[in-house]
Image 1 (cartoon, rainbow, N blue to C red):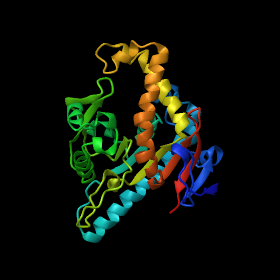
Image 2 (tube, rainbow, N blue to C red; image 1 turned 135 degrees about the horizontal axis):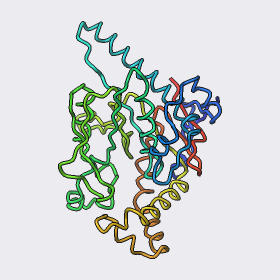
Image 3 (cartoon, rainbow, N blue to C red; image 1 turned 90 degrees about the vertical axis):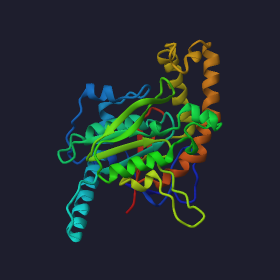
Image 4 (cartoon, helix red, strand yellow; image 1 turned 180 degrees about the vertical axis):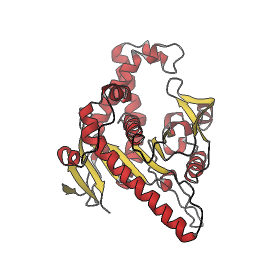
Length: 327
């Protein structure tokens, strides 16, 4: 185990890590922290949880995600005990307090895969079997609204989200309200799906994954802080990799979708399936550099050091270092 220094250094284009705020573990050091935690997923589970261009292995789950699930399980238990202590002190009835886990990172870095794997692992621990998962894509403004505001090329940037609705949703879940609805986003249609919702009904744990979930709340003129979704997190994870590597992953995913989902005439990006391969690659590169890279540099990687834990990935999608915030 070693200490890595993040302080004062801004990694180039989202890659790298730094800070004495964190303890750095290589794969072997982190894997040993599994401490006998049993493997509860099989090969089929892992295959189904993998992403479009990120093929998980059983070993990756065992070395990286099982120790992480153990750490999170300990955090959940401590949070539940602290809530019980506070309730006893106040002499109030102990209501259920969901544990909120936030996962942040760039487009194409593997947030959704990490979220799915952790959901599956955490749900198999006996003391918190109800684990929900909500992507913040559903809280993007509808395309018609983005077009009216001139924000279509800023989709995924903080200003393209219905932030008030997102905060109200998380606040309601954290307060223990039953049957809280979250809107649904379709990557196929590239828009919010009217009338469709994810129902979150008093989970033990709720995982919220999205590009900008570690943003800070802003301060208004009277000095009052406006809360943001990260204010409700009990624990947060940032998925990190060098920006050039993430670009390659984005291009690979784009070209794979061009051969699959984009071929459907109903798909929003169907027009790209008709392009020659070189023209499609040129378009994908343009989208990455003009939109996603800008968002990464301006908004996303600037929040990395706010995370409780950073998973740093190498070019093969394997986590090569884990950084845990020091208490």
